[in-house]
Length: 74
Image (spheres, rainbow, N blue to C red):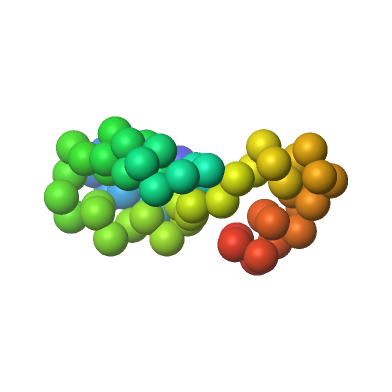
């Protein structure tokens, strides 16, 4: 990764924007998670497209987790 993105800030930005995904079962947990992960850099606030409000635990219990992941992340 260092060879592709020698600048540390660019490397971290790439990881956060393209390699990090998340689901939160409620709005408050979504906000807590995204503020914790992206809060250190205001320019990353628009990078939350891979974070959604969705209950992965419920979907796993129902056997529909794969469909939920596909729906939100393709």
